[in-house]
Amino acid sequence: MTSAQQSKRAQVKVIYSAEQIQARIKELGKQISKDYSGVDKPVVIGVMKGAICFLADLLREVKIDQPMQVEFVRLASYGAATESSGTVQAPYLDLPNLYQRNIIVVEDIVDSGRTAHFFMNYLKDQFDPKSLKLACFLDKPSRRAVEFTADYVGFTIEDLFVIGYGLDYNENYRELPYLGEYTP
Image (cartoon, rainbow, N blue to C red; front, side, top):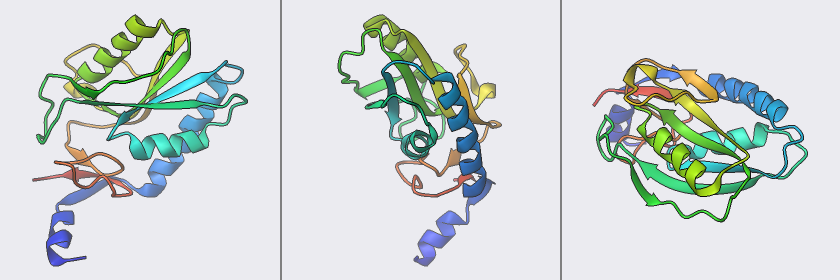
């Protein structure tokens, strides 16, 4: 690691360690396994890029009898900023026919609620799912601009800008195994 990389990482205060994150994901996996036991043809939709680590670890912790179909979309409202732009961008929203399926959306963070609200309404309108739930790694209710409540929440955090475990600042830091507060 170069000294420049070390100084950049020195600006990060750890909020949740890798061990704390994995313990919480095990709990969520057990809850989802219980809720989806016997549910026919569940579909998990990961919202990229931020949900990649959470999605992968959560999928490994869900133990159900049915195989899970996994799909991906790409939605964004941050861009290169540290606050939501207020506009949801959907650069990749190509999904197969999921009509009347049981859908779990996996998101990195519910902040303003705009992205989650937009996507859940899109799925309802397009596919009339049998069930539709959202699991998020982080919930930041103090920033809510649109009323929204996630069904499964990893951690609730204060109004901090966080990176790591899939979350980024300007496409950097997603690889960190922990969640940290980033101060530019």
